Image (spheres, rainbow, N blue to C red):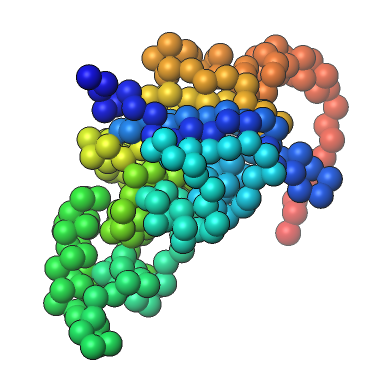
Length: 269
């Protein structure tokens, strides 16, 4: 019997995408297993966000194919992807500050009776979802604008989980978080893994990638360079695959060429 963690739930083969004057992706292969965190890393412009936008239907691939749960997957838009359980939390939070946590979580599908919002039911359902992401100490009626960045991030994740969610894509989720808030986020990601949710984790912070990921795929200039089991690789190898050169040696060469002061400011008022 195949272990749940070994099942390939999503697979992309030969995915390509070009924009005017730019080849964003070239024949990219990628797969995602249930209950794993698969990091997607690369320098700026490597194609990470473009690939994930194709996954959630915000962009259409020029070539290649994708399957979801062994079925052909070609989302016609964001809503189509969400119906199939593929959701993405962007780096720029997409919340309405003046609405409550509960209203943000269920925005677009607020429970109602004859067109009137059923607030008791809304708050009950929101409390259940909020508990899943560590927000059980916050009232569902709390305005989102009164929350910290980490809590708002969790509200975004709760909104994703309030609907069917099999794949959750997190794009630079810790960019504005403190160390303590990152610990909270990672704890919730680990809980999602136990619920068989697959997570695509995009980050420039290699320490985080090494800590939270099961596998890692490296993109460079729109091409897949390698996929590694996180416990079978090291940060040095990953960085080398990302940039295509030995950064340490490169930095040493640069240090030897820095001799003259390029700019000096004295007594600036």
